[in-house]
Length: 610
Ligand code: F6R
Image 1 (cartoon, rainbow, N blue to C red):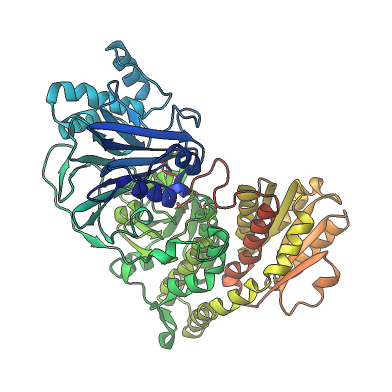
Image 2 (cartoon, rainbow, N blue to C red):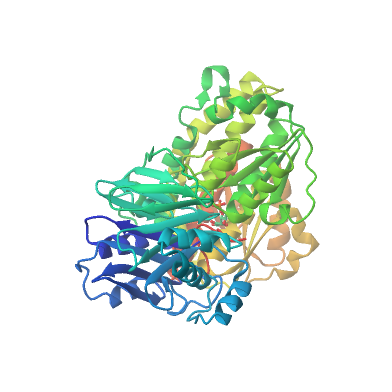
């Protein structure tokens, strides 16, 4: 939520900033701006809307400027206007700041600063930080000191970058609650909210921790705490390739990521399956394995799509690992009194590893002495680092705002976790082996579904003007109904509801008429016969039924209006297959509506505000 980039070095800065912002645009696209030092002044260009609007303002990319910062915004305080775009200036236009996060006490600070004569030009919470820095600079005459003192006044979260004409040889960066990395090149340094912004220049990074303040020069940087203590952090080498963050010939990241799923699933399970033992190996959990086996309850906490993955995980873990599971919206978890017992383990599931609600939930759990495990995609992310143990899903960078490959990889990892715990309990060698073998078979089966893209596109053509959709499923495929509906809502803006199919008769059936498309996930599993009855109920009311069905189901074709067949698999793994046509359906409907699939309105990829 909001993306930050900074550069200091020997290269011309404007193209680096713009390029970095484009790579970060998935974090927010309400406005963007850059600030750079030139001829002893800070120059700021900013524009409401997409980065393309900012680009139109830049007359010369080749300016002799070698230090700068940039920002792409997801609005929290103040509308997406030019004035509210970052960077923000202090009164004298000597200090420029970009901020990701929320200043919770900004009203109090703003009143105090206004009383002191500071004038505000935006409605943002962020602007108070730059005026505070200016206030302390007058006293301290040191930029880093002024930043440190200003941050002492801030309640809330921040990732910030500051440049100033008063001290032209440095960028100051600091974080609390919003991610920031420092990239290290030869005679150059970068700052970014996320690795994709700098990956084409360097793989060597330092992850800043909460409370870190970095004073960054061309050829070195100095890291201290808010309390002014020297800090040393390891340089980590990112194992990421630039091609993984490019579209690779696809029109949208979302489509590319849907099509990457055979490979992303393979990466999630690679090296983790021990077929000969009907078991799995998860290195990141070895030291907590006994705790997992002995735990009385798992609490899976997450938001959005990751929460849907957690729901499927609940079914898997209760059935095969025989462990009671509760699934909690992370956003609700800490605002009640969650009862955590000594033997409870909290598992936080998050693609980005930066979701503020999920982070808050794990911090609350740790306060209550629970063991916290993380299931994350982004390596080195806050949730990964704050968890006591965990598993990476290794889906690779997910740039499309609508989560697709991360969901299926989360499910694959939850299946691995199920086998790991289950095999230490009553899950037989034979069934453990079967699950493992079927996980290995999934990439091929996903590829078979992807070949049906044209069929699904035709379906999209028929239904893209529908104002509403219902998605229904039972058992393992009830969360898939929720996820299918979410995908459609977020990228096509069509109202869609996901329900357990049997709940339909308790209310939603009132919505059914000849204009209502209803997607049933109706694979041949333990609830198949029941689902068929639900389909009949809908057909009796003239609803238009689209079924996701098993490849060997020949009888369903005559009952429903449209059918998309998926290969057979184990029931517990079926969501990994049944979601694929629903991702493609949502994608093609949104494309037919002419919408921006990768950057749907009002959304951002990484939700770092509560
Ligand atoms: C939906 C989507 C969101 C995220 C949610 C949690 O397509 O992307 O619902 O799933 O914001 O994000 P993570 O998994 O990064 O914690």
